[in-house]
Amino acid sequence: MKVLHFGRFYGGNFGGLERHVALLLRGLARSIHVDNLVAGEDLSMTRIEVDGYRVYKAPSLGVMAGTAICPTMPWWARKLHRQESYDIAHLHFPDPMSHLAALSLPRDIKLAISWHSDVVRQKNLLKLYRPFLDRIVARADAIIGATPLHFSSSTQLTACAGRSRLYVVPYGIDFSPFEQPQAIAAGRALRARFAGRRLIFAIGRHVYYKGLEFLVRAMPRVRLDAVLLVGGHGPLTESLKALAQSLRLGERVMFLGRIADEDLPAHYHAADVFCMPSVERSEAFGQVQVEAMACRKPVVCCDLGNGVNYVSRHGVTGLVVPPRDPGALARALNELLDDERAREKMGEAGYARAKREFTLDNMWNGTLQVYREITR
Image 1 (tube, rainbow, N blue to C red):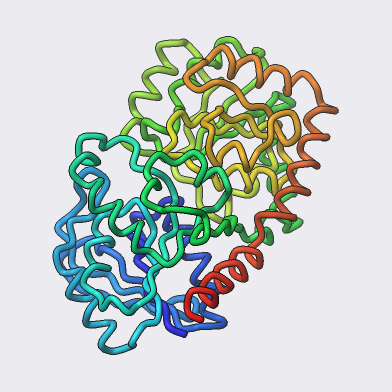
Image 2 (cartoon, rainbow, N blue to C red):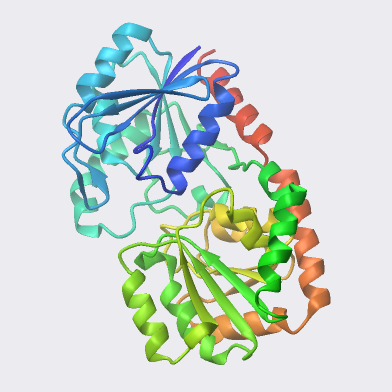
């Protein structure tokens, strides 16, 4: 079996979707032939061999409204298919560029779509794009969602009549970096630097839908011995720093910048509570929640009515609050910071849930099963 994935980006433009595709292909490559066609960073064509599969970076003119402008991608999709004779094209939506490229392939190739989230912000562009989106959804042989709520909360899967083509395959993470003794020891060392203070950890791109502004605004109402560690960076980094300064939070909010992958587990282990304050349904799963659960940390997140709230359960693995509500965030954080026993109970429940549902084996085997069903 041969499958061509359209994974949007690779390398410097890695986000949650791209990290998922990289993990997925690493496992699939052990059983089948997989390639990944993505938009490059410039006008050159690049081929990379990684983890048993190939990444093809097609020449690109840049990014507009979150979408790669990659006019040669359809041509490269056809060229690769002539070389490999793919059985399946696997798209990762939302991504209009890969949609266009997939239309250039022969109709007898099976079509799978991983539905990562609805189109949320580009509402005006969606009005133009919606007829084409409905058409490819209706044509797809399989639509894969990471949770049942990816389907029930979607307003853009209406063209998929019935449920026979809907498959739930949860995202998985690699638990090994989070369970290494050295990662746990590094977490203790990091925590010791804060002399017994309570630690809240948050990480993500500093963009509007991550809701970090509301977490910073919550901090004046969080107990005074608490420190918020914010990882990541993005277009809103400077405005978030200015907001923390205007609220006179001083060293109660620390911006850490990009955290290297090898250092990330220590930050989860150092924390008392993990917070993912995302406010839009662009956040449809929240892999960082699973990473926190892998380190036995309770999660505070917002009620988005989608896969985010399937991953972390209110009152079981953490607390769920209304979005854009700094007061509610502060109350939830204080509730957990004040109650060590509740933190430990929810942390253990989160760890058990993560190990049961969100493993790489579940993700790899579930995806292979979908491929086998649609190619029978």
